[in-house]
Amino acid sequence: MPKDNFQSSSDSLISPAQICFAVTPDDAQDLAMVTKAIYIGLGGDVTLRSVDNTDDVTFANVPTGAILDVRVSAVRATGTTASNIVGLA
Image 1 (tube, rainbow, N blue to C red):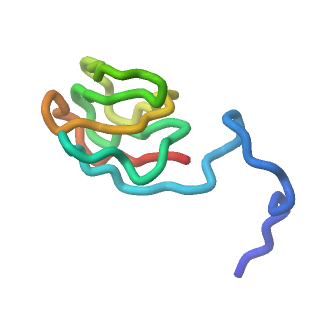
Image 2: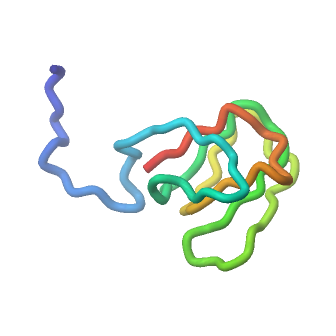
């Protein structure tokens, strides 16, 4: 196991992600955990629900390699054309 110089540091919204996970867009299921941001591997539209919203919103024409600084609770299949999405938490 590598040495972690920041192991005793506390996590916050502005600290780097400690967990990264693949996001599969789904119209019925929320993500397993709320993100700090999401990474878009292949650009397109992303329809998501932010943590404090009750409605979905679509980010249109998100470029490949973009990081959306949004606390996301769900990424929807309907309306999402981007792929290779990674949750950063």
